[in-house]
Image (tube, rainbow, N blue to C red; front, side):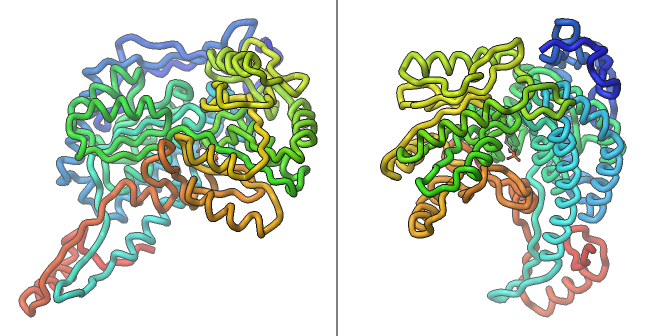
Length: 526
Ligand code: G3H
């Protein structure tokens, strides 16, 4: 679809943004080296739109950022990791206030850089702000639980959670703000220091926040770099000074970065990786409702969600009717520009339409058909969603996480067929189960709960609400993220212990009353 500037509503027209700054050690530095141009696949006057430039940073600067993060942590002795929790929370409150001021520009960049539609872009921003506010409250609650002394077996214990060290944060392009901040914010708030590099797409939208980070946190706590993984992330990992690799993205990047770390036992992992979440449709499922959920599950943001439904198993007794109605519903979906708030929007990775077409061709060559009239219609930045049936194990679409608009459907006779396929799969994030008969549902829920980490009953798979645990089995994740769980994932239990003797008791009392320790405190944060 072509857009000339004049066809784009004025408030969404964009001027190229030069991002020639980065944040290291509390200083916003000017980048004087090479830069990379950032384009949107949305065309203006027939060409991809130039959105701006970002620094293509070199290894030296990346290592300076590591040095800054190391110094700020100072092997646990830095200002930030030893600060009172309440003080760290104040810094985070300052940050979120400043962040809110950039809502409009960040939302506009989300629409242009990753082509997310308007309401989902606003949702991504607002959800991230809510996530930060909820994290602050969750940490207060966690801190209150630790504001006491236990006495067991003749030993007093004051148990809290402490930071882990230096965290390298890398987020994905599909939620460049939300998912990245769901790693960065809990890491920072728990007293770790961080180096953060935005994803390949959805980069410019971080630029407006450099100053907010700089003004809210002590030097070296948050360091922000721009450029390529091989020049930035790899050399940082090779030093062995990263304590936590926090990454949401592809396992190939996660594995290669882990491999570069010379000290594997030191490295902790917080990873959100691939998934191939199935929808299982039982014979008695309400088809109106199921089709609605399957449309949103498979095609919200064009299927570019780790939680998207990426294969549908439909019982053979209803597969023809399901296929007909589902295909019609897909063909009714509106493709357009993000600011039109269309459900389907361009694919931000220039190579994605071609990849989707390859999956379609491979499946067709092996016997599958495109069921919907518009399926696979190709334009310069889009491949219209293709509903493909019947999908078999020899097809790439059966195995690969398509992360885009193509929907494989498999019919089954016995419920063991989808269950065995899930058990054999490399992935184990979530499933959607559609049906009504509780005598059938009950044993299925029992099994599915052991194959994945969230069973969605008559509901599409999703991460939210963010207070619920988000994780996966097998190759889908390491560690758990939720507002509460992320605080645990980025920290470790650590405590003061003292034998219960009159001598120690008197010292402990004085230590507490002195208010001189930031760690030993029974103060209740409200
Ligand atoms: O890309 C994976 C995201 O965590 C999905 O989040 O289910 O809220 O879209 P969502």
